[in-house]
Image (cartoon, rainbow, N blue to C red; front, side, top):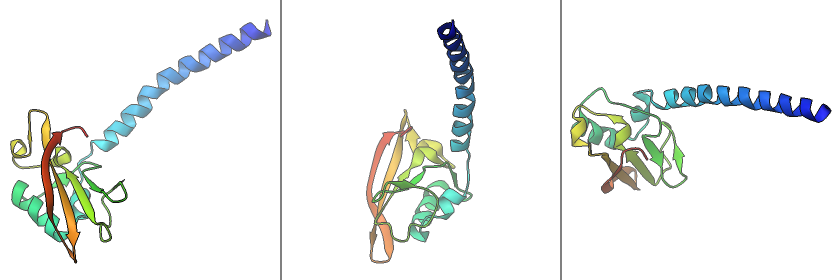
Length: 130
């Protein structure tokens, strides 16, 4: 009898958890889709200038647009000590989106630090959802 009661309690708890999981998943996906200029403003000036030339002013990006390749960190923060910065253009709001993303593939840039400045090290197209 006790075993049956425990089984029913467990089934009820698992049922409740399965109903709550989509709520948490939706909350985090909403946060990741937020457009914010902060994700561009934290980049070095020469990288910001290149983005403005490509996409125009008033740039905004989603979380994980820019990453520090050396330490695999993704944030809009201090890239001063980073040797490589990776940009995922599928997460950048651009004036001409077709210039950076076509047919499910988007531009990616890798900037390398040489002395005190960053320069474009590599440019390639990759999946827009990575």
